[in-house]
Length: 442
Image (cartoon, rainbow, N blue to C red; front, side, top):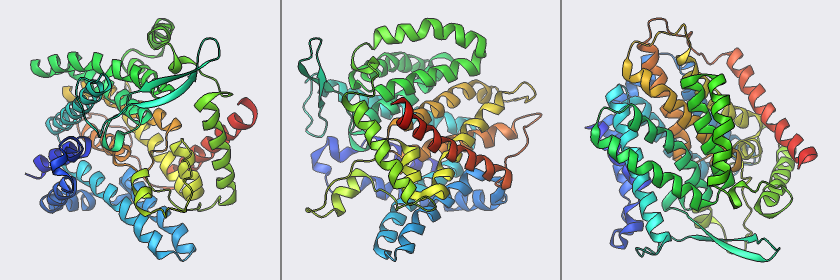
């Protein structure tokens, strides 16, 4: 029952019924679904948390550490109201994360969750594309007009596809689709259901077309990175290099236009570099614990006074966390994703004998999904939304199952000084890389 409710939670997360059926406005469907799931699934959550020591669950402990990092700046300033607001927002994310890792405990459940997420993404993408071409009328889904320079320097306006709900932004929708393409390829190439194979075969061209319509540069890079990670995991780096020599030029031709015009001196790319420069300054001013969590656009619209100026986010999730939460929180966030990708990748090592065929088949696709999303976060501030922690939960759930199914499992990861050193190296490495790029390359 708890797992069925969790599937409904994901449906409510990706497809907000009130944004499609106006009569449902005001109904907190997602809230009631996750509350019911938490009540029914509480024994599973407690079993997960007490089944082994927390130091043997490094990503989970890191997620709890991020809650502390979010609260510290507000407590240091004596702002209890902000501490309550930001803490409550992140606790809701933690609840979803815990439900995911506690309930997705078998290969069958993993396939069910991936199917649910894939179908939901396909549904919102289909609605967005139909609305983009004016086939249907939905006031909650609108394309975004963006100005670009024409061939002869004249100003042109292009319409960029965007979704609904938490993906009501072309770049965020594109990164989501980039992460979903490997999952669609899994069901097409290794799925056991003919219906899912046919459905995936139909959705993959839809996702590709939607990625093109978003005109998102960062999303296209995430898409290419996901395909590269998938190829590397399945075929090795030599064949991946050969495929890249053919595939990258093909992508440049297929997605020609705004997405392949990479310049840091004009347009939104220039704006993004200036934002990185500004947020690097914010990071230097509050290097230890940051200035405090930047709330999502939705929550900002609810709480910001009319006379307050809107400050644009950093458009880089790792830099956003460094500026918001300092080295403490920024290193935790960056380290969590490095650990997530590494923990999935090492399951594919030659000396790691994975006996479960289902888990062995899905490994490259889960790796590609998480890698694509992690790369997409380099150009988006999506540090505090549920899908970001869904990716961490996916890696934890998969590696727990795979480790148990290994004849020679890799050494367990522990939240110790060695791992914290890697977290620090990852966070500092990101900060230095962004600084070098902004200072010398842009």
